[in-house]
Length: 238
Image (cartoon, rainbow, N blue to C red; front, side, top):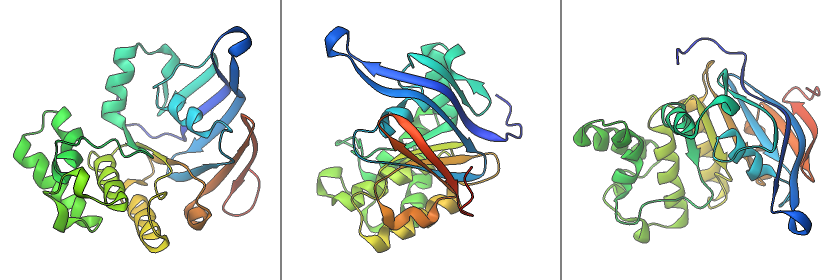
């Protein structure tokens, strides 16, 4: 895919998703309309269980919607096969997971290097680049540590380094500061903006952490599977 200029990094229209069947079915999303502009950081906020993570997972192409359209970086996810979605994510999308998802048998540097290794970058080069990114998030002293010896905050910073290392055009973050103190969380949000926010890119953040709301260019509020408001930083509704 050529990296042409884009106005919206993400556009979803009429998005619906439920789980289960018959009497056990639970409808989670009820016709979501949302756009994330290129070059911006969009926060998706709301109470637990309102559908925020499900929405993020659909935008990632990890789940298929029951109805609606999803365009990511000018590409129609609904038109892609499973293999095409996997390739698209590999080449364009970075993830910061709430549960970290680090590989326990790999060191911090090796975990951060995984996206490069998947792209068949030589191992020595991948580890060197991962080490530099880890130093940028203040983990230069923990390059050879395994996940079991890292604190929750340190594991979160490894996951952030892993997400940033391949310079993704779309960065999807699920509670990125949940395990961090206020000062560290603020510094890492500054790192995200500086490293991943450019005119052909975007960052989507699902969060409950009101301490980092000031970093958002746009805040979409969810309730019961619906977007109830979208507000840009100027305070003018979008």
